[in-house]
Image (cartoon, rainbow, N blue to C red):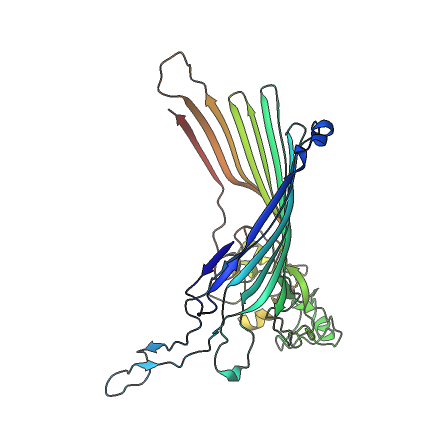
Length: 438
């Protein structure tokens, strides 16, 4: 175990003890196994572990009230701007270590004279006294809530790898497949009103709340007969989005944005990557070798934002228009993907609320890297300072399968600022080279 101290916490809260232990047992070392099963199962080990680590990822001295000093006061006194001191904000005198406790159980196994292997781990990770977001407080307080140890969360998941390695004559080959998945749930957070914008007990990290889309109005008569959507904008007509009236009150709105009253909002997806996987393939024959690596995500939802996705938004800042953005509604294009565009951003925003129509399937498969090489044999009888020469060609990010909007790279679409997609995609690259061993 570890006994850690930190100057970031107040005396009495600055020390934490974080124990850990692990154990394993090799079943295949037993005599009965060697006599009966060793030819099929070469090795089998079960193992388990439990441990804690501390996290102090907060600013220094949160427990001390500080008074900011500035010279930028907007008054002139005696011909100069005076220095002024701001009142101290709220503090958390008892903020302390965040504790991450992980329990793991798994096994390692090898079959058929170690040609086939299977490794599996199941884990439960609990984060106690997490530095969660500040609870919502009345605006009349006049100060923001300080960071506190106010949340717990739990992550459950697994990791596995299955691999095969063999050699047939001069041909050696290997392949491996790995898969992992996890989900994280909030297990403690004070949110008495169940406000959706805050953590709440039972919330899955990555949840996407949004509206269900019925379609696009094809006429003013359709819009007039539809539910009241004036919560978003006063004017609705042909070419606008129709949202589903889930609570059947004739109006489209988020209610009070709480668990008890979320109006027509519902959970429409989750942005957490699920079922991440990788595939390794390798071949070698005489002096030739080949390696291939593929990766992907089996399930992920994405709610895009910004002009890179919506294109014509009426916003002059960070605007980009691509060919696919021209597929917007008009009387000549009634089956368009995008609704009717508007010059004003306020009116345009009514049609681009987070919704099922524009929810993206961010799962993908990518040929991440490929390398082909040839090792030039060196005649040993000749005195030559070079031991080995290998020529190779490498390619990266060669091929991608995804159902996402083609503007985006599924690996980089949701990083960076100014909305989805405003980050450089990963480039497709090719390189040639040689390795020389002396």
